[in-house]
Image (cartoon, rainbow, N blue to C red; front, side, top):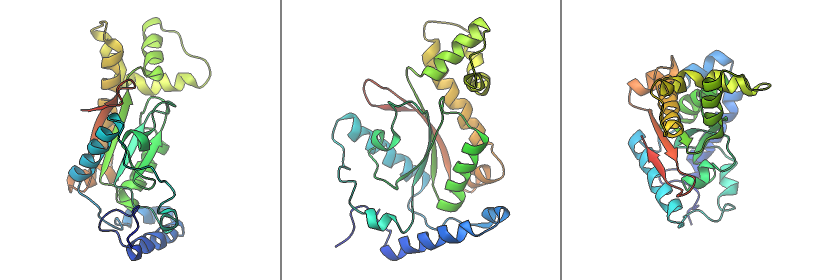
Length: 236
């Protein structure tokens, strides 16, 4: 009997290879990571995006497919084979595996308040693409984002936020500040989208790993905005 947690095309032998590859990668010097090719190919970027769209449709309809998270637990100890990476907000109401109805091991998730690219986050996304073979990186913003609201307010009144929270504002300012050049009642919604698009562009231009993989067609960058009320993701 096949393991329900194993994606089509991934045999147990293949998963064992992934596990051995992961162990080997921990023994390699940092510069060697750039030489590692993806250990598998579960999908094209377009197929990875289609999986996310289909999963979100199930979630929004309250008809999720993945319910038994114990299934396949033993197989997952052999390695991971995520088909997509998600750069999402740390907001407690935003849970990518649930939003896209994906099983453990399907998504490689990086989270930070405001879903923006950091050096550590970029390194993680590069690892996902170069070593794990993720085919898609989705920058996921969401409506009613507190980090976006705080950034807008700080930019409007010029008052810094306390502690290291101000570092969030500084990081998000380049993508959000242009929204205030044409202020309106929908500033917050436009700022959420602008922030997503700004960070998509950063990833698309990131050298040497992501830009090269985008160029050769093995990786794509996408964006989306999650609606807390409906559960739906609007893909940009």
